[in-house]
Length: 199
Image (cartoon, rainbow, N blue to C red; front, side, top):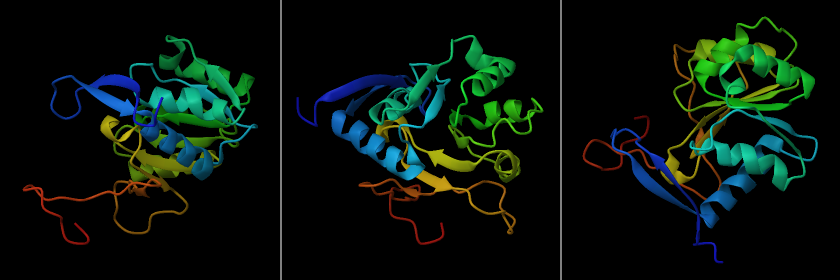
């Protein structure tokens, strides 16, 4: 096999509402996993709880990232991934220290009143815009917080932002961050032309 062979095809509707097959090559997945392992600090002590259904591209991160470093992968049963009390139980019983979830799931998890449960957890939040008030609430309870962004076509994430401080301006949404290693991001206007700085 070469780096240009397909790793998987995954179907997504994106913003169009029409499902399309996205072909992801080994080089994209490998680049992403190397970035993730290095940037987030995945190693043999990592204990990740996988909540994502296999039909969503983020599942590739959850399945492969801990395994390529010799870490522990805990697969949540399908029904558990929708029950926050069960997620909380698994986080505690397996001493999970890496957890990825959408903002909606993080909101539900924070309602569980387990104040110290996430103290050792590196929290990944993506799949939709991350509100500043939610980021602040996660930061109060988790060891680390990353806001992550990316369409399926660019292999899981395109950008990551480590949330390290309180927000002093009038921002309502956490930044999506900078491009991951070996990639570039272009901000274009409605006509597909490069937008000026700050737009």
